[in-house]
Image (tube, rainbow over all chains, first blue to last red; front, side, top):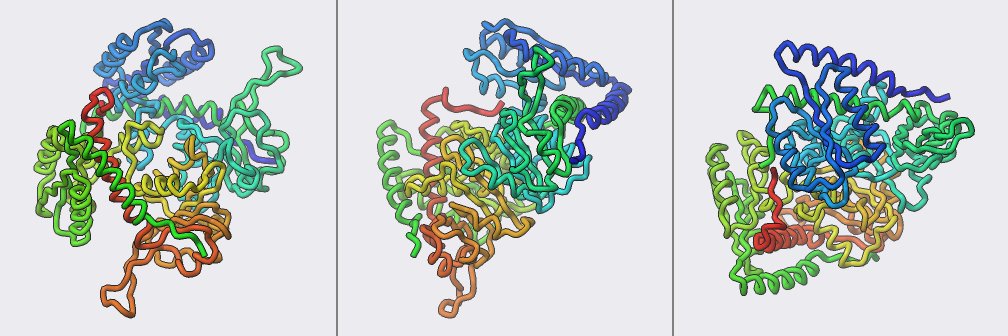
Length: 298
Length: 298
């Protein structure tokens, strides 16, 4: 049976570490602050935003939510973001996605000062992460997978990593991180147009699945001994609960008989995402002490 | 025998197209201008810079070289770049690499205004290219390979592309472009730490080699019918010329018997690089007319 890689446990450990560092910063009079901009009333977004701000409070950071009606104008939103950019008590800013279609996602993202873009979605931070510049912020989900790889001592040097899915906030940045000097992995990125997907997945020493299709990856598609990261979060019908239950993209029962280690869903990659958001916010607060480290866009 | 993909011919065609568009812009009183900053006296750099500025003149653009001694101070260089950023007659700026070690390559790059960064090396443009934002500039070499793929009608949809080498200015951006919506290729990026390189290269429908090792790729490493792009430029000893001769990373004689099409060295990817620099400079000049399209970093 595959060893379970628990993001829940690692997150607990890491949040305790973060809380200690936040306490140390408090002695300098700095309280890391995250401001979350929430537009409209998407119920899922409400849940995500609450868990993010709650996580902040739990580690001693300041977590604030700024709510706006779906009809908010882009100029008003820009004004709010400009204010947060200028506020020394705000170290991290994120705009909860999705945002209403009348707003330009791209323009809103680029309005956030790169030094406060703790989601790592501003193109300047995307570019910095791409070239391995530590001045950038790495998006939380790929950063969380890298953290699990480090803490679980999973070898990547010269290993073949196959990523299923090509999302801009998970798969592509993760591919970039894993192939870089240090991890030195060989990386294959596959997606819905890939011919004969299993011919690729079966060669993977490390398999990362981030698609959103329950049961996409079955035991026969996994190399014996492979390490599997399941990023999928899907709600499926359930005999017991009318609310259904959450599963990943990997057939856990089957694959756990083939893989050497794997993340469960829930309790795997998911909990790490908010934890890495806290890490980025803490880092942004630290950098706010040292202007020479803070690199604004020109 | 493999069909030869001639970058020389495609470049000739494209530069004629560019010259026509430059002429059209001239009617509006706009002459695309490229300024090349050259620090020190690296002979290879001298050659590259000359061919870039000459190529500009040949298509009716303004190509200018600003020379500085190797000891130039970073502040002086910044002043020069700031001046070029502000000069409306300068649409493209590039700093010829390598630059002396006492200068911060990163800081110099980030000093160039992203809208004039026709090399596409500014992290903001790297990020835009990564997310597929057309406002960014794509580095010339990967852009040139994409152009050859388009003009030679080489199918990429669902095909497996294997890239050998992981450079930030060729391999990684090319991987990002090929896996994106549109090209829809499955992409594997390999490098010097890849275990059993040929097990990957042999599965490639399209093989791109950008390492700098003469003869690295031999016929037995190539799948019959594959399309091979050789980005390597290596000077090797030669019985005839004392200056040696230029070869790529691919054993041309051997691989041309296996591949269905391939680029020669010289005359393949090389000539396309300067051509795509002209394309970026032309585009920068066009955008200078429409402020709403010009997106500066914040």
